[in-house]
Image (cartoon, rainbow over the protein chains, first blue to last red):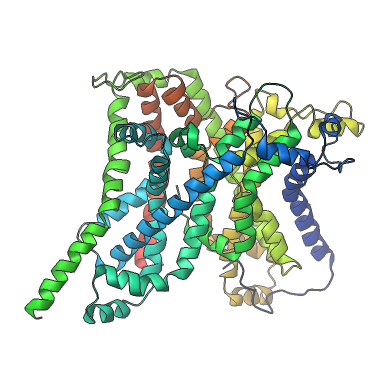
Length: 296
Length: 298
């Protein structure tokens, strides 16, 4: 794991040598490059427009203002409506919560059935499901629009939740399958002898043991679904547009002067949830990436 | 085995089948079904609505006579090569440097990886702002006295695609760093001792011994990055909207435009199938090698 401490004695010396200085120089320059956009975004979002017009991108604000944040939240225009990005925020919440729960529930049951019960034909299904992770979304988008329209789910909240569940299934299934495959088979056999059925063993034995993998799954799904743009754009419908889509609309609305400070505040607001999750979860996030190697 | 137990086993395995119904439906309808449907439409004359006639390869011929499509392929090839190469090199370097037992390792890792937590749209918008020639880096350089400074790639037809490389490399190279770092930490301590005794310079050990040993991390990173290349859409929409003109057009955006904007689903379906074939041609062999290795326990 990336967070593991390197074993002692690996390095030649830790004395201050030119090579050592070079290592730090490289890392500091790299860190500055990675932090620069965050810095620019933050300072821009608290500057009044007069200061931005001067073209002093990197300068600290002379006159600090929180007005852009207020505007971004409640009065910036996304297309014709000028109610800020708060609607998008709640839409994203309404999409992320059920999508995450549903896709994890299905992924966990799939992984459990595949690892312990192995019904005939399940292996083939799983292989095709894994291939599904690599199918470009564009191949599936239009037929899915037609199917959802036919069952009256297109442009609805249940529709977009279903879509996220379908697209999340390969990675979630893989994640849980790998986790359950590492558990001892004896455990399962003992539960069988004690008379446990499919659901009982799942709910009373496997699920309580699954906390670590569920944490990873939640991080992956919340981040992935919150950051989604394309699926929300196509399937959510104007009533439920997620925050990412509304953000893009705010910034690319062409009427009047571009309010860069408001735009940057809106961008930060849109990134707050995944960033917070990243900073709080740390190593779990990295674990999620490593196990999501197949994510499409 | 008693009759009761046999009966029990049969009844529970029914539950297992029922539990897999959502997966079966997803595989059959959402994956296989849509693929077949799209393949079918790609050989019909469908425009706004799907037709069921058969016109052979004519959509594919039209597609490859479409300049915008050819441009989008050229763009994604240039983009993909630069993006994957830059992410792998930067990610590897960051991992190697962080692996030198430096101070504040945790903080550095956090800094390099945080862009990956953000959406492509947000990332694209930030860079659009920084690269904007009137107020961004170009203007800052001019204010500093370099009055002739020019950095207007984002509005330059020939350079716009490179700005998307910059933004997405910034976003994704931390991911490569994280994968490589966990690979580096998995390398046996003995290797370093042996190399030190033999007096081999460290950089030599990294290039000739460690890098080949990181094979699995590199291939994981490659697959993830490759999938991002095929999917590149959000960042283009956010940064350049495919412009100026159609200069930064990419296949994913071309297909979405023809599906929903220009109502030419036959052509868009043909383009999707081309994209799918490309992905399978590159990912399938890699995946096959990996599963075979896994089976052999390598």
